[in-house]
Amino acid sequence: MNKCINSDIQEMLPDLLHGTLADDARKRVEAHVATCESCQEDLDVLRTVKSAAIFAPSIDVDGVVRQIPPYRTIVPAIERPASTRVVSWLVAASLVLVVLGGGSVLMIQSKGSQASNSTSYSQVQKPVAAGSEATKLSPQESVVVPKTVVPVVAPNPHALALAADADGLSDGSLVQLMNDMDGFDALPGSEPDPVISVDSGDSL
Amino acid sequence: MIPSPEGRPDDTDTELINRWKAGDSRAATQLVGRHSQALARFAASAGEREGIEELVQDTFVRAFASLDSFRGASTLRTWLFTIERRLMLDRRRAERRSRETVPVEESDHVSEYGALDGLIAEEAQERVRKSLEALSPTQREVFTLRVQQGLSYKEIAEVVGSTEGAARVHYHNALKTVKEFLKDE
Image (cartoon, rainbow over all chains, first blue to last red):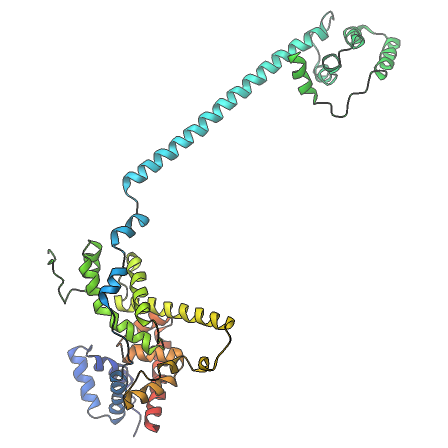
């Protein structure tokens, strides 16, 4: 027996078995099979396999259906109602407002604190420059003076006098001043930052 | 057109799905009744012996829970076969893992498909069973889906995660093997 070479027909044999072919295709396949031993043999094998369907237990349809959750319990998890979405947006907007408002308040407080610091700083400066002709300090001096926190942190009568008279000192007096400064007590290692020292001075 | 309150036997799967989504639980009964035996046969022919009913049930529960993802690109039955096949693979992997920790016994040497011993009574069925046993797992899946379930190659490719061409090759190789086996018997 020769092997059939009509692959189109061979492909449709299972469909013929299941009756899923359109009428014209079914007639064409049946006409071919009637004259082709190879396809007849294949069809017999397929028919045997199909009829020998493996044993399978019958399924309790109602039991299966009882286990299926109703559709409505699944929907909310996937798609929330519009009212829930609106509430979510309102909550989110409120949080943004709180954060922005809080930030603004903090910034304002921070600026106010800086302003008061600068005010107190000038108040601290005044006694330093009091009695001097150079009441307007140069930028360098204005930076240097806060670093010498001696008058604020460790009040020393010599320091105040020395600082007040520094502008009019001669070279010899300056040398004397330097020597006096060497004699000051060493500042502790954990000395706070000069800016903080000014603050602490402010509180005094 | 207003659908009739009672389910009609010629309702399409899509119509039944829409009715179930609208709250008609009888549509679910119709869908399960329409496809459950095919799923059970597929599981049995794929080598499952125990827990077929549970497997079918799990398949439907999972399918109904994700029915919104079913776009109708394939038939509902093909989609159900795909879900069931994945569950079977998961189950076999779990069994394999448990066997790695449990001492192997004599009965464990029976092949997967050999577990169907005693379920097929007729002599012809016994011959068919043996011929199918000679196939590779993929050949067996493809062949039974094509011959016993009547799926197209496109649908089979979706179920087994392959291509139509590969499914066609598996089918023809399986047919050749089964034919030779039955001829020799």
